[in-house]
Length: 538
Image 1: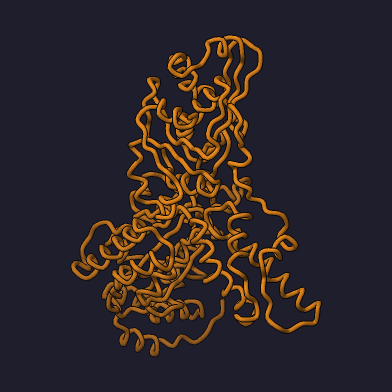
Image 2: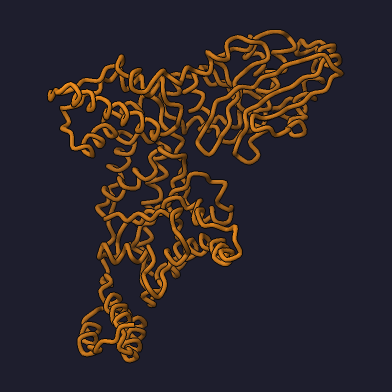
């Protein structure tokens, strides 16, 4: 520890001239009186005095303009734009009408798979309000001290306040569902730190979602409470089930399902490609990517709900075009056409699941939700000579026969209504293969589709390859509500589905899907499984 003369006179003068709360002033005065000549102690005290203690006015968002920008420019649905504006309006009302009141202060949480625009929306909100943005990647923190500070350095939150020099900012906390996810836990040496991580997210949410606690936020480095009430906190998460239900109650959750193909083309043209050219220091008119080429990249090479994969493909195309121009010794502008894609990114990988399904008895589409978003897969039923055994497996190898027992029970109870021969169930074994889901309890959402695959096989009649059934069922064939409908519909659209039956209880979910999907897909709400089977096998 370096010993230096303690300049208490200068620090005392700064303390007297700084408008800090009384309790903070008393704490800093005691610390000033107890300085022992260490450079570290003087630095901590000086940096505490330099924090932006003066209150600033509440930034007032122009809600009408923001809503229009979200829908028209950022491809957000009306529901997403409404939910985002709801949060901002309530926050402004709380800060302006009752700034000193106690009570909960929910955090805005944008949820969705990678590449669907979570961070981009946060940046646009900050720019629209006119506040600086600080970003903290919670999944990259090495220990809780990096968030809340210690004797050597402030935590990320107060470091952002200190660095930006103002107390009203937008603080983006990315990957709140994966906080501390990279911390090793295998060894005994790391176990104590691992145990600390278990409570870190709960502590963070408690300190930011209670009005009184937020006004007294304390970082271990500065050692004095600081008012964070004017900070607009936006969090992101990839996978909502990783956040415990009690903690979800502290969040205003806005789920972003992903983009339709036309929106991806517009994003590639208006945002991804220009940003890429600026990064490579290439003039905007040096590289021109034809719209047909962009559309082909989206529709023939990507299956993601977001645009991360598309961004990577664009980089390949642009870099290869620049390289070929350099090899040829040319300097003029380059135009990238659809016929140039094959030599750079290879053959198309997205052929459309409906083409691969073809019209094969025992095969139909099945949609599930995974951490990467909605996924459209196959449900396949096959039979072989046996004694009537029925086995249901998923693509991850799990035996789901017990969870899907209701499907064969329904078929057996409705043989004549379904046109199925009893012999097909008594003299043959049946295997069903269904897509694996990451969403807890989502297996039931494939029950209708599994029943369709069984009946299709036993009647030797192919299901419509452009058809998808979403929803669970009861033993009497009544349709049950499904989870993750928006993500599944987006996946179905990418896979070439044109007709979707879904539970009537999920009909309201159709209000939240992008408008182009209503034009591209016919939605058929149903109450009974038999209705779905009739549509699929017509």
